[in-house]
Picture 1 (tube, helix red, strand yellow):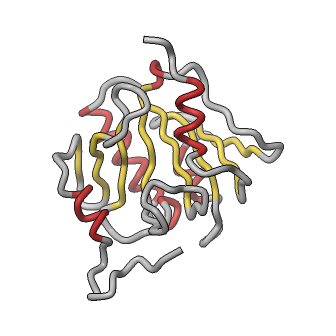
Picture 2: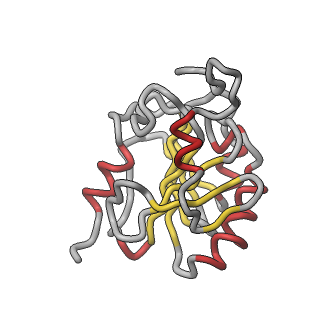
Length: 173
């Protein structure tokens, strides 16, 4: 995994800067939501940290939850699923570069989302799940933007596991 800084000392990778320059769906000082450039389902969005982080758990989970419950909920009234592969070696969206991002998809666009593991942990909120992640730990998180969340620590999953599961579970249109 590469450093969060680029050779010129710029804190954000050029790819992340270009994504952050997209017209946002919603934004605050710490997070931005933009349309996914390669949506799996209609309404597929990306949630990104506006600062260099390797995972959303490395940021402020309470602030993220507040952003989702207030700012994002005002913009997108329908319930959304949040899926993140933090510190993920199996994430290939940004190539070898790792930057905190989550997939947001409307709950009514997928049947159900599950990932194979006997070690799924369940939490009442996304913030509680993210706070359970030790620094530097790879994880897979999924749950409703304002509801319960599930977490797998140290998952053994193939590249693009989230996109593959969303493709498998998307409802016929």
